[in-house]
Amino acid sequence: MTQFYCLILVPETGEATPPQPLLDANEPWKARAEAASRYLKLRSQRDAIAGPSLLSDPAWDMLLDLFVGHITGRDVSVTSACVASRRPATTSLRYIERMAKQGLIRREKDCNDNRKVYLRMTEKAFRAVAKWIDALRDELITA
Image 1 (cartoon, one colour):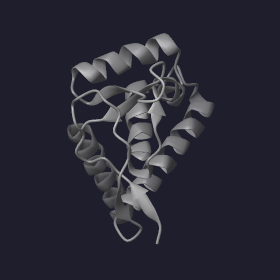
Image 2 (cartoon, rainbow, N blue to C red; image 1 turned 90 degrees about the vertical axis):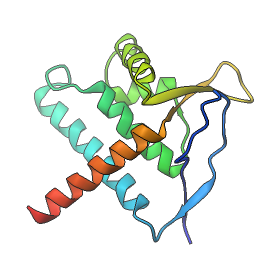
Image 3 (tube, rainbow, N blue to C red; image 1 turned 30 degrees about the vertical axis):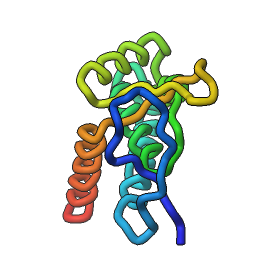
Image 4 (tube, one colour; image 1 turned 180 degrees about the horizontal axis):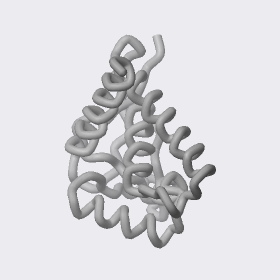
């Protein structure tokens, strides 16, 4: 049985918490992560046509990447989140700060290397993105 990792309830201590196996392949989380990944791929293809500066949404791209990482147990560093946004690092860092102030994400230091900082979704953000993914999938299925 395939296991997926998810931290649905995240402590607000700022300390790194290792992912715990909470989900199995029979639950809808795998499908949600795959839908978010496909959506990010389509956004990249769209940006190749129109250019990323015209249709950019760096905060949303980072949230989707964090969502997938959250489910699969992949740690998302600040650097990785900046890459996922497909925008300059300074722009991405501003969005990270704004999302943290809005309670959507939080920073955690790596417990083995204090130079590394990871981003984690809060429960509020996780539930909101999961709800959006479900609505997107429902809309595409019924369309």
